[in-house]
Image 1 (cartoon, rainbow, N blue to C red):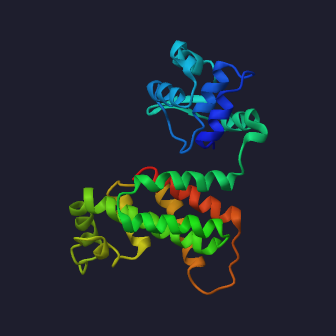
Image 2 (image 1 turned 120 degrees about the vertical axis):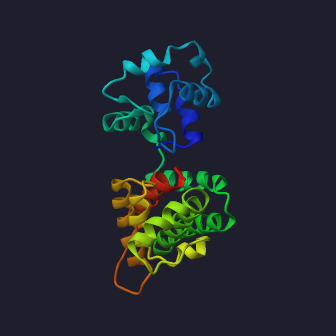
Length: 242
């Protein structure tokens, strides 16, 4: 929801209390569950020095129903996200600006140069309002990231599952080998070996369908918000996880 600069401005406000500022800390992009220690570290890095004197766990417990504590840490509920948007008011950037800012923040975390170049080009395309191109390039970058992850961590298991599904499958050793498989089938195998969950697979299939629509000559028209939603899904389910 918030990039670093916006969050610094919000946390510096004198009219907001400790509980409100802690909820704002949970809204930093990329949004994800945070432990108490992670909240402290993030807040301190953003200039909220007084957090060292706060009982963070106690304060967050009193923020319900705006926050919830899951197995991976504290996170905002839908009600909480609405509440922090209201707190931010005019400081809240446009949604699309946040999405692109979040995608740009992911670029340094991508070690593979080829993967990174696709993401960088998708950012340029989006900023140039070339939304079909941004959708295609951001998808290609996400698939490249997943290929890289499989090669490094699950290649043997992937090949076993792929062979069970198709006896003609030639054992993959590189990302180029993985690209021989249709991307829809690739997602099925990823889910079957538990690299991604069913719900993530379903969302990525929606992204793939949109990518296919944008990558071939047809009458499909897409705008800023459609492209933004597509990229946000890829950020939350691929770029920030793998």
